[in-house]
Length: 324
Image (tube, rainbow, N blue to C red; front, side, top):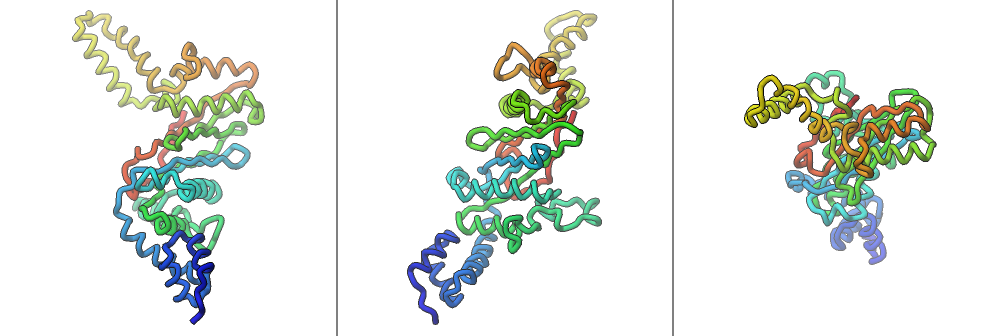
């Protein structure tokens, strides 16, 4: 039996984060081969990870990754059980690596079980994130990567959702903003009449738009994008208020339409007061930049907040973005 030195145990602990006796026993089982010992621990870690898989994961981080010269953006939420683990370098690296991996491989769903019956007949397993080989190490899958971190940090973890934006027009880019603490993240696709992606004024504008979405949480881009059911519900609420206030029925509709303006300011990005200068709307901000930058259009946006999708692993497919 090979002698297991303290230095070898230390090296394995640094590589895996496992306990001293676990590392010593794994090295003994592997005959002193550190690579084989890591496999032994990984297998044991995967077994222990299964016991943690039912535990609630309400904490976590949002990560964004921009690729393709700004024409492709990824937003992902990775969850864990505690804020303490979410703040560790290991978990932050995991989240960033998964965002970069998604940009590289462009999966469609998180897990195979998320695929609907209608999709299943033609769905390829490699389009499920957890089934994919990790782009930095093709010896492991994303599922393996997550399980390894579960074993090291001792908490359940899961990718709960992601979305991918790719610019469909000739000119444009995807902007991102992740708020301090990585609890809120945003992607915004901005389309332009000409290529202004390298223009510093445009770069400030698209970041401001992403920050606006993070801070003000709009639901739609513009008035015409508001869902008919949501608009009808708000109109009914306002009309009921007007009638109860004793306003004449013949002027009620005009009053209601006037009050809908406030509703639009709350839920439509273009109608919201700009967070840095609330005397102008986001629409007016964009218009003020058109002279220097040309025509600018917000095509879509998405906003993630940690925990909004409920507990993982109740993993959902990539949500549909808001579109213009």
